[in-house]
Amino acid sequence: MVTKQAHVFIKGDVIGVGFRAWTKIQAMHVGVTGWVRNSGNSVEALIQGEEEVANQMVLLLKKGPPVSKVENVKVVWETPSEKLTTFEIVY
Image: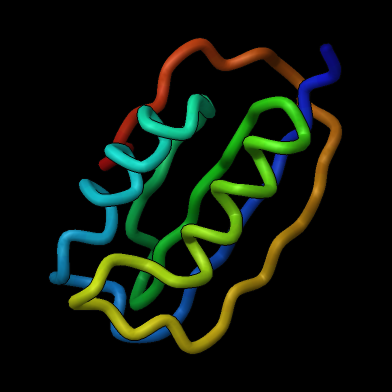
């Protein structure tokens, strides 16, 4: 099993709409690890998992929760420097 890592930067109407909590729920459902946090007026997430589930999570982030309006998503695929075991909301 090869772990893939996606560093995702999400811009749009993504603050104050429950994006981080929704992301954590989706991550637990899909089966990825990592973290999500607010970063200025955007949301940043680090996703780790097998290629199929990591890609599935990235697609979910591109849509966002129903009350959000995702306008731009940048995905940077990286080599994991450490293996994450949980998914957390980082403050």
